[in-house]
Image 1 (cartoon, rainbow, N blue to C red):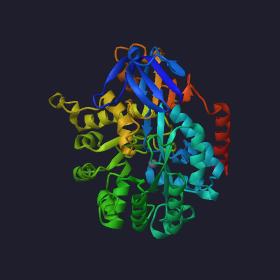
Image 2 (cartoon, helix red, strand yellow):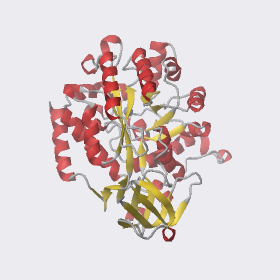
Image 3 (cartoon, rainbow, N blue to C red):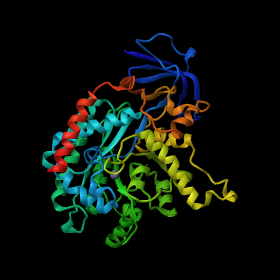
Image 4 (cartoon, rainbow, N blue to C red):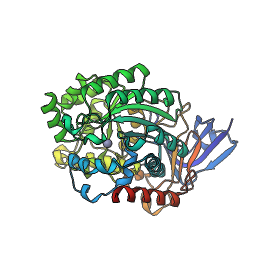
Length: 461
Ligand SMILES: [Zn+2]
């Protein structure tokens, strides 16, 4: 029965219902779950292991709600640097089609290493092409070695160019095979218990790369097994035009038609939602993975996040794939979520003094999206906050650093306002994934070398 006592944190952010922030805070952990949270002098004084976090801020582990780990192999590809979404995809599909199982493994570990070093303890990933014998199993096995919780989305593409879709026929799969593999993965890996390390998600890629039949059948299969559904939706105006032309309706109405509206569904992006569509999400409990860097990088637009939150939509943060970010830094993404919401408010007139009462995204609001918000989007009540009974997932940052110099009157806000930093500790289920600023499970220089070799092979092929 291993116990871990975390004590003396300068401030501990709980994200509980009252949003308590505890000075000189600590956590008592047993068997991977939190037994007590409070002032350090009110916690048990003995444990198998003690971590003194004097001078640190402690936050709940951050939750990443959208990624494509494999894209860490194709950052800043010259021909895709300045393209919009559809042209970016068409440039990259043939490069991705060269991936092998070992590329899935190395990119998974690189992405999770980056995420963990930015405070992430749970990550969702969306893998939607399986070239040259690659499987989702390659990603799941590689993730278990790192120790970050994984929601592995069995993505898919079935609507090739010859059938009016965007991807080339060479990267799409047969729909019966997709559904068969989805079922196999659920039965092999899906764990819905509290503290689960691996969950399976069914995730046809987007309205422009799969058929309505595959959407419907994936939804039925997911609901039979109680797994979540995920896809990209309303990312760009091109996509809205596509669904209107091909299906005669806007993206959210199309999702209603294919039975993809419910509390078990979360959508990446949702930049182009109108008020009625936000209302549909709110009424039915659909979640949103907000990916501000990607939306700016691809010139997609600024999602109406404050309107979604005001309507009661669950919103989390996602770094999105590393070919459109081009990083996996969740604290940076949190900062960008705050700044992009302010930019959108400014464009809408928030800078006029008559409108100064307009709501604005706060630092604490952005941190909520990155923690408890993301947990809700992934359908998890066992993570996202530091409270008794929850999984022992947290991250800690030493406040004595140049990045925060002059900001220590409000360390919590500093985490979102100041330049993003690498964290000092990331702990998942009571186990150290990052300790003293170093990954515990990877030799990083070796990993970087392997990753660069794989990327060079894909690009120079
Ligand atoms: Zn994406």
